[in-house]
Amino acid sequence: MKAVMFLNPTGVDKSVLKEIKSRLIEEEITPVMYESDEDIKSSDFAIAFGGDGTIIHAAKLCSAYKKSVLGIN
Image (cartoon, rainbow, N blue to C red; front, side, top):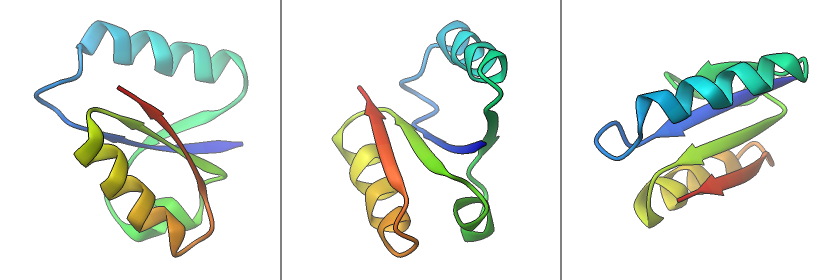
C-alpha cells in the first residue's frame, strides 16, 4: 500500500512527520511526498498535514483520481 503526503512546510513539526512516516512503514504503507500527479495516481490514499488550505488543496488534486484524503491539522 502507498500513501502520498501533502504538507505545509512551515506548519509541520519535523519530528512528528518522522514518527508518522515510521509508523506507516511499520504498517507496510510506503509514504511518498507529493511532487506530481503521478504520485497521486500510484497511491492508495493521501495524507494532508497542515491547515484548511493544505487539506483543501490535497482534496482538490486527489478528487480527480478518486483518492481519499486524511487531513491532519
